[in-house]
Every structure is written in C-alpha cells, then in structure tokens.
Amino acid sequence: MTDTMKQFKARAMSRPGVAQAYEALAGEFAFLDEVLKARVAAGLTQAEVAKRIGTTQSAIARLESAEPKHSPTLATLRRYADALGYSVQIRLIKNRTDAKRKSVHIDVKSMRGAFPGMSTTIRRERRDRV
Image 1: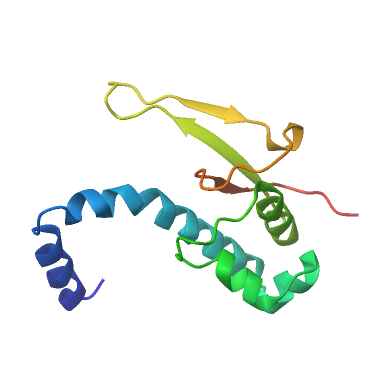
Image 2 (image 1 turned 180 degrees about the horizontal axis):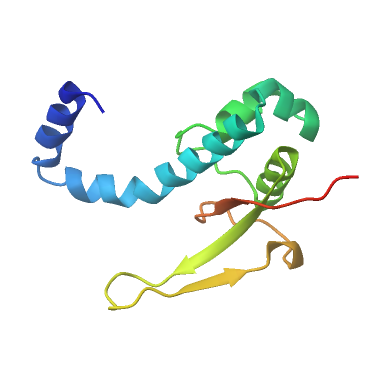
C-alpha cells in the first residue's frame, strides 16, 4: 500500500462508523482476494473460466466483484472452484468474544442448495490427473 493510501485509510478510519463498516466487510474482501488469487494461480482469464463452466465473462466479473447485489449460489461457487482445480469449503467461525476461536468444517459436496451471502473459503485441492 502506498503512503498516500495509508494516509487516506488512517484518516478514513478515524471517522465515526468507518472502522466498524470496514471490519464488517473484511470477510467479503478476504474471500474476493482468495477468489482472484486462485484464478491468477490457475493462469486463467475470466473468459477462460466462463467457458469452462458454461457462462459469460461478465458473469465471472460479477462473481469476482465487490458489488453487494451479486451473491453467487453455492453451486456457482463450486463450478467456479472446480474450473480452477479447487474445491469450496464453508467454515463457521466462533465470534471473537471467546478466548479460543473454533471452526466448524462443512463438507460442501454433501450439501444441496445455495447459501447466498455466507462467507466461504476456496482451498487448493490436490488432484492426480492421468
């Protein structure tokens, strides 16, 4: 982060309510960062991912955007992750009010339906290809 951005962030965070709003969105931005890093690591463009999962480049751009009105389904996230050679994990993490943070891992493959707005994590899955 440049010095100018650091200064801007410091000033913004000192304003009432900004720090709480920033913290509330931190999980979404962390997820988007993981999504983008996964696609870059796979060496694919948005158009290439779209072709692999049978959608348009603009749909992939919306999935990768921070636009709050777009909430992809769990099925869409699974198809996206699979196209990159990844799998999706959903974790419920205990609020920080407890001294120890615990997480619950859910096997997405055994679940049906979608959970819009739920924080998810994409993890690299080793695959042996013949």
